[in-house]
Image 1 (cartoon, protein in one colour):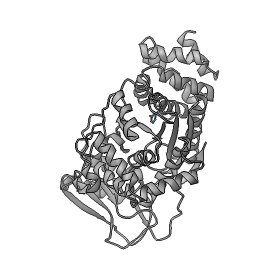
Image 2 (spheres, protein in one colour):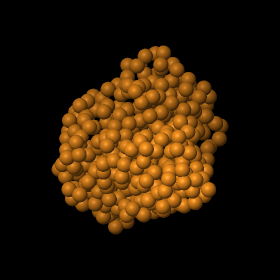
Image 3 (cartoon, rainbow, N blue to C red):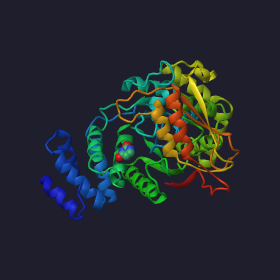
Length: 434
Ligand code: URA
């Protein structure tokens, strides 16, 4: 079929075959399908959507645009985890060693942050010496040796997604559920794991602002996983305020270490246990989520998960002393409290605004070439539902200079809404789609 006929068929609401989608994506990768035709196709998908079979076929066409990681040399059921991105989301730092400590192998490929959300690779690089660029062989060997590894995804995996994402970004076609689902799942499938747990975030700091949008994305991704025989579960979690207290790379590593010690913020611990319980069930290490959770609680509370994190840090060349002494992590010179202008109860915290404040301090990137400052960020002292007196701190800004600190103080103050009544609180875990 000619490319124009494929576009026409989608434009008119027809269902494309796997062969047609494969031809389109392969042509785009090879350069024979130009950007203007692909842009027309993307806009047709934006308005017409895709059936579950089309979405799965499109995903596999993306996977076939590059190399895939063969994790067959790793013993056991390999289980991966993916978050659609949030503010203060350091769950991977806790979850990967925690699940590995249960005996389930975890080979995790992660990305860098862009915009108001952070990336696991940037966070790990706050640990002096930590290497995130591993060859496939070194990655596999490490998982076989110690049970886990976290490495940066290479450009060889799903190159068509990279090219397509850049095109979607400039053609107003990013926020299409089948396109997002195929983009995320193609990278997970190319990463080679047998099972996938997805953390789909919804709220002010998330990509999916509404519950309906999050549910639609979660269902689309689970359907893709099921169609290509990867056991997939999606957990929809709240991102109406940042997760935990710390936002910023070294600050988040320190908070993850605290959580691996069995303490840490309750919401972070809760989310790690909920996601981890599904991971150990999919890996065949527990009969039920309740049983999986009990196993993981013990691993947190006995120090076994923290020991596994230290092992991973050392295996990847990082300074393992930070696990015992997080004060060795990079820190910011200037610390300024953000004082509450009124007395009351914290009613809401605009997660996206906190993410932007941290990014402007240097914790994230506005463009992909920006350089990260690992020590800076924001620590929330009060979260939704906490009482506060006038002049008491809502948060503390960690900055490299007083000018940037002042700017961030204004942003953080504006992100907090202090009310005179108890806010409606929604649960952290909103739904599970299996
Ligand atoms: N994250 C991805 O990886 N792809 C998208 O399309 C959107 C968010």
